[in-house]
Amino acid sequence: MKKYQLYGVGHAIMDIIAKISDQHLIELGLRKAGMTYVSEEMQEKIVSKLENQDKSLISGGSVANSVVSFQQLGGNAAFAGLLGDDEFGKAYLQQLQELGVEMDVKIIPNRSTGSSIIVVTPDAERTMNTSLGISSEISASHLTKETVVESEWFYVEGYLLCNPSTGFTAANQGATYSKASGNKVALTFSDAFLVKDHRQRLDTIIDKSDLVFANIQEAQEYTGISDDRQVFNALKKRVKNVVMTRSEKSVFIHFEGKDLEIPAFSCKPVDLTGAGDMFAGAFLYGITNGYSPEESGRAASYLSMKIITQVGARLNGDIKKYWKEAIS
Image (cartoon, rainbow, N blue to C red; front, side, top):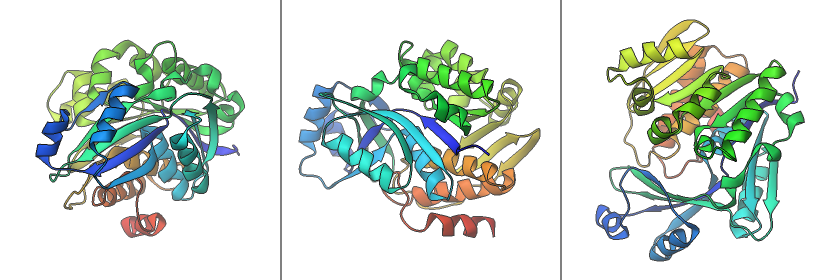
């Protein structure tokens, strides 16, 4: 038996979440529904313009969110990332430690922790401005080989692939360690722009992956096909196991040679932040802890519905209770 069930590597980002009007969004000059990388200086300016807004601070980052949900459900998970020796870094480390996640995290002196300003408009759409800070420098040298080897799954954040000399080396080396040890690798596409702009590096990790998570927009970009069903058929020919989410529509899953379609749970969204991260963490928890792919997909869909009815990517309420509700 491995020491860990899941070892995720990704950008350690402190989420700064605020609910604003569409007019305020325009005044801030932000691109609605997108994710934009900005400098630390620009991030500070935007934060200052939100000083009169109610804000929440939540330790985030795509894979970190998935690792947390995995741990909260009862799994045994670890997370690798870089933090600065600032207030955000201290808060981030404390939050994840309190959640029980094993932290394979390096604290870098005199550097800033990554942050993401997430503004949510009345239609529940979220717009993100991200300053990676020190998190952008995570590389293969920051991984602990023994932890990768002692983990059933190594989970890679697609955003890491943007930088060939740092993040990509972490993803590629970790996947190599994992496969050489007979373990499994999962990858999330993260964003359609990444699929378009960093295809070669994405393919390198896909070649080592046992499971890929993609939303419909990312999958369409990857395959060049528009029809949902045809996109799914093309993707599953490329990857051994696939989870393709489709917003408010059903989820398509190809797992262990079987195709599944998991119905979506209807709700009135409040904040779409973290839905995909929750799905991935919950699905990985299920298939690693004796649940069928159908049960895992249904519970993941239910928990994703729950998280978008609140603000922020950390689910309020009893997540284990919600899991039981979904599969009962």
